[in-house]
Image 1 (cartoon, one colour):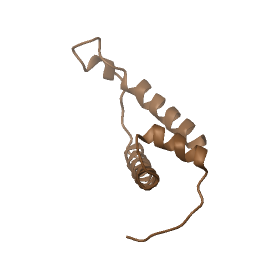
Image 2 (cartoon, helix red, strand yellow):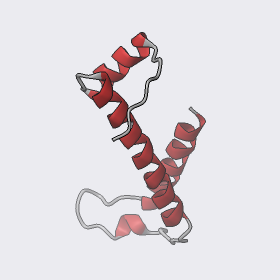
Image 3 (tube, rainbow, N blue to C red):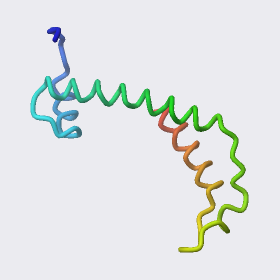
Image 4 (cartoon, rainbow, N blue to C red):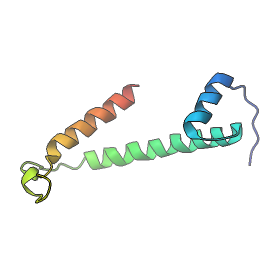
Length: 88
C-alpha cells in the first residue's frame, strides 16, 4: 500500500463521511475511489447495452400482471436520467 499526503477540505471530507457512512479519512477516500471506479464500469456497461437496438414496441402487452410495463418509455427515461447525471 502506498502512502500519500494530501490536503483535503475538512468540510467536504465531513460531508463525504456522512454520505458514505465512513468513520476515517482513509476509509472515506478509499470508498470514494472505489465508487468512482465502479461508476466508470457502470457507464461502460450502459453504453454497451445502449448500443444494442431493441424493439420494445408492444412490450406492455407482454406482461400479464400489474397491467404490464411500457419498456420503451422506461428505456428513454433511463437515458435521460443518465444524461442528466453526466451533466452534473
